[in-house]
Image 1 (spheres, rainbow, N blue to C red):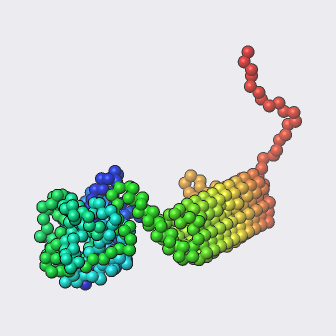
Image 2: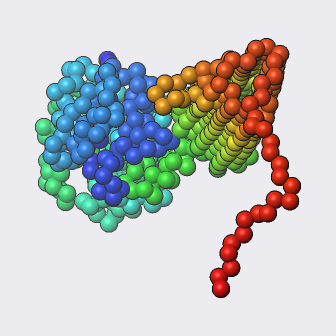
Image 3: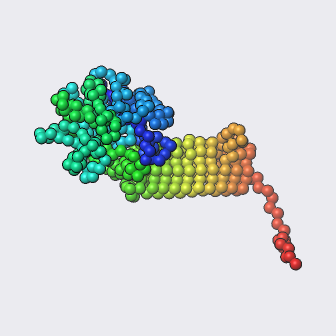
Length: 456
């Protein structure tokens, strides 16, 4: 049978105290519901049905995709009511997995185990043992140990409240089972809602076995209702990522101080210092070292690269054995060939820097091609924008650009040319030439400095 996933994401999330729908609050740089949808994709679900309500248009805009079908639940009358809205879109012969848009850390392996339990004679239910089950529905078992029903916290007796095995809300059934049981739900309970969990009792009465599965850790099934819980799950997620990195041969100066908000691919013997943030797609090759408090977004870092503290790299590529920073900013389109160096307080953008070239400090190089072994002095600026259009600067191999120079693009500096410090270069400079545009120095001996008049 094909797999269809129903993700419940219609709640308002009032305890978040936010105008943003709860399921769109970010965890590891991705909306909560985005994690759930991606997990459904990893399971190769044929269809993903996202039940939306409060802030539905925002949710649609954020999560719209070809494989996501949105179901609008205009009135929130419980989880059973929400799933019932998705039933008309379900294939009659599918397996249906119920997930929640505010439970972002559920693992693929756990769900695969749950799905393996499903047949027309059996359904799957994810339960978890909690030392403090406050707020959760309790799992009721019959004398033989089989799951017989779920009782919600507000409807439970004092004896039932002592049960530590609780319902996670995540379950897997066949489409035909859902169609039989959902019409039988009642809202005769303390909340006046249609509980999806009541299908457990209906299944038991019908003789369908409820096979229970447990997650590897409680964090997998924890939901987000407020920002404290969101922060706790953020740290749980980052801890998992840190463990995977270290098992793959990465040294982390402090596993508790790293944030991965995308996909980080690493080779062995990589070192990452404290406070680093990785966004988008980042690849770090063998032996590279990332200093403290760096931000890397969509970057490819070659072998042996050393990035010093507080550097920001975005949409760039470093081929290997490069030195960057501290406090460097490599903007989109930056490409450093092997052994090229970008130093402190240097900003680059759409810049190709050749092998062994150096831009050591306090410079801006944008829309530029810098040849191999060229040296760019401190305070150099490529003046690439005229207020309307961008223009390029070409600096030949082995050229030397003196400190505090302005290169007014479009301009071509020939190979081996020298630019004197403090020059403003607006015309091409031939190879092996010297160009200087300094004003003549004037000196006056014994010149009296102006002084303020003293009031009488």
